[in-house]
Length: 226
Image 1 (cartoon, helix red, strand yellow):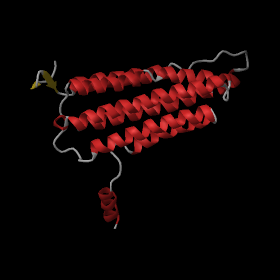
Image 2 (cartoon, helix red, strand yellow):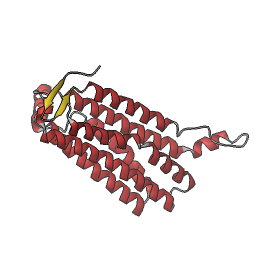
Image 3 (cartoon, rainbow, N blue to C red):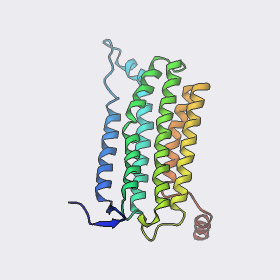
């Protein structure tokens, strides 16, 4: 049963419950697809240990992508704590976010296969560029999400931090640029450098899941410790 609708021009504005439930389902499917990339490798008798070790790109890809989806889910939850209603534009931005999230298993598998064949080869460089491109697109989907909230502040709860949307935009642009840089370094220098950045960036998003630190927050923490 859907929540009450509020007329907003010629389109209906609704509560966030259905969008949150649908989004959680997509996130669950996304992480499930990632784990399907881990499988029992083909091997000769006595060669299982070596075959498992050779699958290290799959383990690394799973870790990086699961971490990314996990922090996206966390940031998504933090966003919807602050959103009081949905309109068509915000639904579209949310669907764009879910579209990119759901596709993450594809470049993850491509990267793992390419790195198993040759960690420095052309295919590995193309694969990390593909991953970086989709990851950057995911960040841009957050740009669209926060940009819509900036244009429609009435969709936000009345007690939202005044810096929340601005910080969200900064974090999203920073992530997009970082993934593009990672892809460029992976192509021009070594794919392993791109992999390292892919593993680090989810940590940034986790640490800043409630926004970037502000001078006031830093001052308040200092006073508290004093």
